Length: 85
Image (cartoon, rainbow, N blue to C red):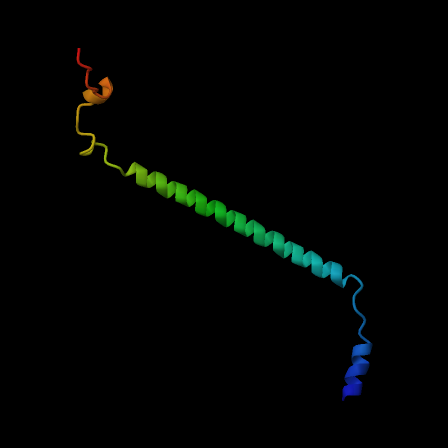
């Protein structure tokens, strides 16, 4: 049985371009993997940007508690004490 398998294996000749073919397939898979990863990163970035813009757009239009003044003090600048004299 072993002799028959050895004789059968001896009759099989490797393809001379086997390495080049295998390397080409590996490079194609690697290129495709990188392209899919780049597209996935771009989609996630775009989605995060759109969600962020949507959240910012949901902010209330009326001023909140912090900005409830009329803004006159802010327009005049900070009030500093005047030196005596």
